[in-house]
Image (cartoon, rainbow, N blue to C red; front, side):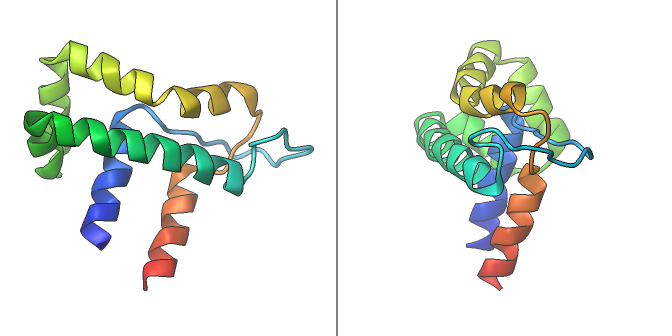
Length: 116
């Protein structure tokens, strides 16, 4: 289970979903919270999982857990990278609309603690 969670979070990261900042939240906009990020991550993770299931070569590259192999694969498969960027659009929208955000790493640590 933990390996699956790590792979899912890796896939999300591959999709360009880094949302982080060190500034405190003065007034959070809708979705600019851990719950908002978790909802967006859930949507992106579900779509990414379905996409990877339909693209076994991409999934094999992600399953290597070697960042260089992942980068190399998507550098040579630009159309697939573009599809993943589309899947990640809810996270990109959240990043653009929130002055500060809980990071995916923060949420991953929560999931890790819950799985322990």
